[in-house]
Image (cartoon, rainbow, N blue to C red; front, side):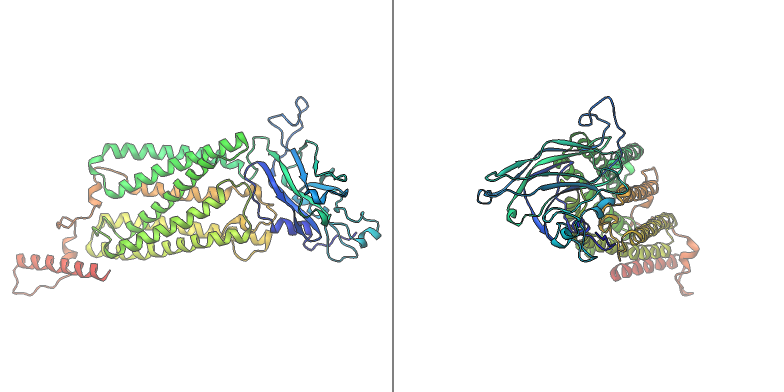
Length: 517
């Protein structure tokens, strides 16, 4: 039975399946079989599971440190009108992703099939009408295959409860399959329980529990520093510093909620929908507010201009659009979900967020350039210095972000030959990089936290905070000689009149510049 290197039927199933499992306890509430090639299939789940050392003192089903997949109350139900005949086996096939080639086969190098064909049966490779499977050469005893059948007039067939011990780290996939066309309306009910040695968190999510615990501690330390400064100099606090306080508070709530979300999931095996929704919403609000703060600061709001003028509605519209796009993406990706979305679905939802992010970056740096020029022209050296540091921090963040995205792209092209990578997991069709998948959300969280720390360091409340605030009373510090060089008074004008004329002309130029904006 030749096994070519081309895409196999089971690989095709792994590629096309949109996983809709709602917890590490995978429930099947009347899932109907769908036709894939010449077989009928229900996808039972896909999760990364870490190696479990055999425990000789406790049963594999109950040991807390064991990793296993347990089948509980799995039944197959067919309609009464389709119960007047006996059937062949209905299979539950559990395999590690590296063993996907062991499912299906082909005759004489032709098109591969999951169910045994007449040509394959003539070769003696399998029995016609059965699912083709063979033992793995690299993973002895796998894939795990269980089967039940229907007797005449029997509407329900029950699979015996069992636990499969996991002794090899890998991405495991479960499919229910049969080859009987007359069972097209059959459904599967029951549940399977997937457990890692450390708990019920799927393998790709397990490291995030400790990560969000660390990030919660980091936000706590940042919050203590910021709130102590805020309380100490509360009389000197600017409106910008109030906004930074809001971002820190949102970040503290977001990290804590993510930690509790993963902790509860790890303990019970069922993801707490309410906590997940709150975590997603706090995170989306924080990202939106952070971008709006950076944009308005870049425009010089509260520093060189008292209001945004006609730009206010555009800024609000951009922020609202970004919030909606991000909220939808995060809700679909996280709420009640364990497995990754398909590549096309992830690309469809991620693209609007990526475009809006790019628009934010473009608008921010354009505004920063104008603000820097204005500060330099007005010789506001203290504000110019802080804005230069702010610009450098943003530039570093953007460069690091672009570098990371390029790294993801190269890594993905190496593994999956994709043409573009918005998210690492969107093109890893077999989830073979599941052990590294947690690094993607962790990186962006660390990058945004680092930028927030820089902003807190630059604009921390102090006794000199008010020198960075906008003022229209002429109290801004100018270099006297440089200011006078901007104006060429006539010889007939006195020194006093010369200074007054210079002030009027500077104010007039500022007014014209604001109008041009």
